Amino acid sequence: MQKLLAIGNEILSQVKLNVRLLDVTQNAMPLLYSAFRQCYSSEFAGDIFDESKKDSSNKLANFIRETLSSGHESPLEHVKFTFAIEGISRALTHQLVRHRMASYSQQSQRYVRENDLDYIIPPSIEADKVMRNEFTRIISEIQTSYNKIIGIFKEKGIDGEIANQDARFILPQAAESKIVVTMNCRELLHFFEERCCTRAQWEIRNLANEMLRICQREMPPIFSRAGAKCIRLGYCPEGTDRTCGKYPSKEEVLGRK
Image (cartoon, rainbow, N blue to C red):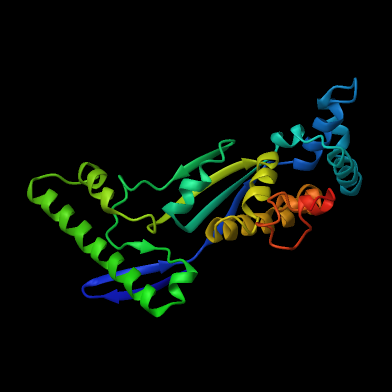
């Protein structure tokens, strides 16, 4: 989703978050069931898998929920989700790739030229006219300077990724990026615990909440109670001075003052 903005000779595009599920592991529930069962059974997981495909989805879901409640999560690593994501900033992707148990394929600023700079503007800045005008003015100036540098490279007979790879140094963290992300279910639970929290930055929190919505739709036995870590713990582990108030603080639960 784009919002076009003309400043001087530049046409800039303010873009919005878009998340699309590309793929989920096939036969995910029988696979998870057989992986969980293998840990406690002398049977071969292949035979368990074949038999479980004949069982009702409720039976598999209930078994998985019960086993998960005991804290046994490692079999979740056998099932993965793949998302296509656009309308996010480079500032967000720098945070996202810190989640190391995942696979990423990100749009390159070396091979993709930023002829029309798409950007993300924080809501706090967009809501203030003075800050919004200053923000978009700087974005426009960066676009102008980027185009000028590319033009000078061309005059020198340098084009394509050789020019792009150095011109990109001027681009801001607000520059929009596109990325494909694959995470297994266990890592997704961890990702949601960290990034759905109100203390996470607004942009990656919005992304996490949208990914969580998709996961809950696709696989409720795993993700029905996923989210910020306070949901699992029943209290906020961040400390009394940092809690959002949705849950009691850790100190309150432990009876400390």
